[in-house]
Image (cartoon, rainbow, N blue to C red):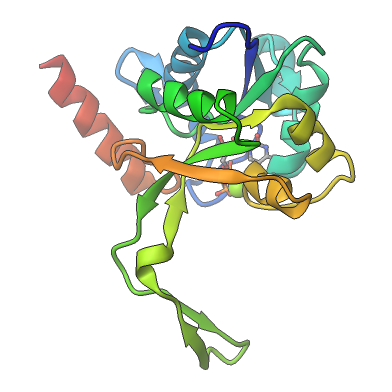
Length: 213
Ligand code: CTP
Ligand code: MG
């Protein structure tokens, strides 16, 4: 990774897994838990890592107590990142298959001058924007659309500024965009799938079983 940059990663594992039906971050995936896989990739790519977990688990996991929203958890994590960090990555614990290369790609883009970098996957379905009655307002041009994943990397000062007002969004890049930061999309990876519903864990387990065979 880039010399002269100090890279810290916040691994957010503070959710309750409503769609999954429980705290999916602690589910076993092979010999390790989902969050242990995500932590290993983060540790390999960073000078330091902050783990954010639900407040009741903070002591047991040696982590920081999270917030009621993902952004709240990122903010709790940011407070534990030392001021000397120059690049901060944010990674979903629920993405156990993020590779070292994914971290390198986003950190390299920020070291090269972007305020933020996110891995993106081309969308295969056609995307429609609708009103409250589900009447279609427009069909978006698919070629310019990407589905954003994590790890996402940011210039530390810009990420701190973006979170200063306590804004909410489904990823950190959106908050950085809102303060005028330049965010670029690098190539994502279909294997870096988020565990959201039980079928995602079933897929992940079969993938791990295949790897261990
Ligand atoms: N997350 C967090 N703090 C929250 C909410 C989410 O740290 N208050 C984390 C989750 O633990 C997860 C990541 O953010 O690793 C992505 O969120 P998501 O997949 O939505 O997980 P959950 O919020 O737990 O699931 P759900 O939305 O179905 O309740
Ligand atoms: Mg959620």
